[in-house]
Image 1 (spheres, rainbow, N blue to C red):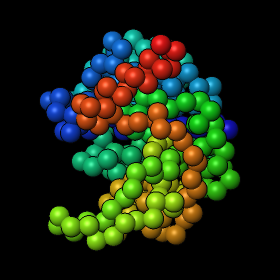
Image 2: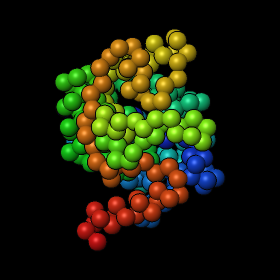
Image 3: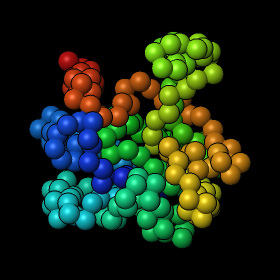
Image 4: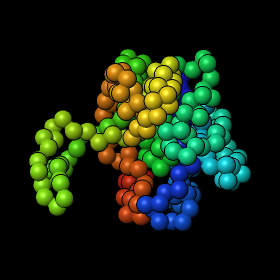
Length: 229
């Protein structure tokens, strides 16, 4: 099943403490965003990549895209003041003939083709699906410095991206959120609040989001594992 993918890349990555957009940090000699774009830019089922960028970095991204030379077209979209608004800008640019759209973090460079295919299949079946992995740690609810409750973890999942949606459902959810002035934690939460079902597609623990300096150590280890080192 063909799809388009939205990749927000306009954030400042304050937790990375790099002083600039973290997607420009190099991993194996090239920016993180290159690794992410290549995963979709070599997928024959991907019709187009909508890369959401800060207008101040537009020229840099255009140069990067030209150097990558991927077969899949990449369109630059200007971001908004919040990630949700950035995604909405891109959703409004999706081709009318497209049925399925994915939303993926630019800082998750280890997504794989088989996971993308399974996710898209589940989105076709259910209308929406998100990648997730079961929580491994014991989770405590805390107030102040005191534990108030231990949460049963068997029903808890850590949500990843991509998240996949029928375009009509994602448009409806974003428009309703905009009308209500609601800001969600992710795109799936916008569907949840209007009563639309969202299915889980089990991902893997390598599909990390590079958010802090420590994550770079894990990213390098994953790259070495993938090379068979």
